[in-house]
Length: 321
Length: 274
Image 1 (cartoon, each protein chain N blue to C red):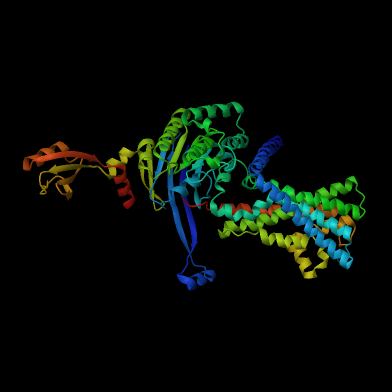
Image 2 (cartoon, rainbow over the protein chains, first blue to last red):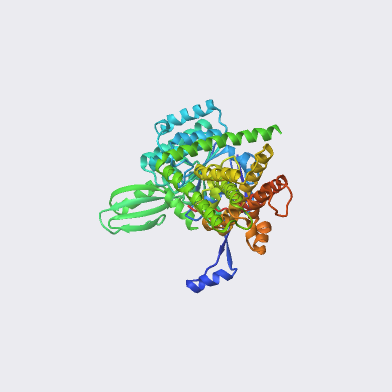
């Protein structure tokens, strides 16, 4: 469905010195820096996948998704959607994509939501039947019909994002790009947005590419993660696979009756706070049960619990590399 | 061929919807309408009153009598109004560039330049059209023009050309923002220059300036050349129709240039970071 081949994007930035003299020198000098925002990125996405793009701020996520949706022109490399190059045949290819960027809207600010939908119906030449059907489906998932007569400027952020999602789905695109769709949303709005993403993926087989910083989005939506940092891909796979590869450990939290927690030669004592000690162990080396029995043979235990490596651990490790 | 007609029909259909929405937006803020309907026509009626005063004091300007000046002024205001309706967004292109507002046009299956100008079609420009037409009709009567089908045809061609020239200049200036990544409001400057050069006969300016305004920045073609040909005033060019067609050609050429420059800018478009 989507083929990204050796995608690169450079930005040229004028180098500026400090203070007024630096600013004046900047006027005449031609010192520029080239920033490689995205470097040689290649991957393939199949029809019906939900792919999460994650990475720290400035990693090149937005730049990549903007090149994939035809907004930015790549410095080199190509993006093929359904076999067609989006840079070369923008007008034809964008028919097959929908785009929602959490921080901006394509809705007409001054008019009721329905007017934007009407305009999109004309732009994408959506037959009235399909238009009504899609709207009914969207109403079932998001309850959009109660918003349709509301002027966009009076909407809450959550309502506006709902409106934008429906607007991007009216022409039944094959691929939906979402750039930080849940940013700034409250818990219930996030919930309905995730439900929406899951449902259109299941019912309409829409391929979904999203960027997010939200761990809940990643946990609940993304079957596949592409982690990028400094413009290059550092991980590609599903959450479990990545976890097993880069964080194949668990943490045993043990509470004793005093502060003198014992060490264990097959796991690492990573912290000691008061009576609570944390032991990190590799799943393949030893089981939690063995550690507990070893520790309790040395000292009486008050309480134990086991923590899996969380998404945030994985992200921290991946980002740190 | 059929595909071309189909595409044209599609664009016209979308345009209809855009215009409908522009009207609805206008009605949404009724207080603005009152303001525009008073201040815009007033601005041009005052402008014309100044010309009337000058002519009455000095007899004529550079051989142009009162009726002819009204004719020139009227047509100039009409093409100004048309360019305000369709192309005024060019003045503000820089804001759209740095705010990343081209994103949504780029992700829709229509021409980006078309969407930029027509999603923001400026219905208020109509308020400039009224004084323009009034002064133009007044000028026709005062300068004793016999209105024939041919004359109307020439005026229409010339107006299309003039509007395209103005629009082309706005687009060329606006598109620089793609390269400079800054938002400069060119509107004020362009408006000043356009007013001073299209509402009076170009022949009253020094020759060097005339040369610039004929060949380098073709503002002379917005009103002076076609109008003087229509009125039969010597301008070094032959008949009215030829001049009207040259005006149209200059307009089309400038639009093509502007379109190419716009597209080259769009390749450099960086959206807005988030």
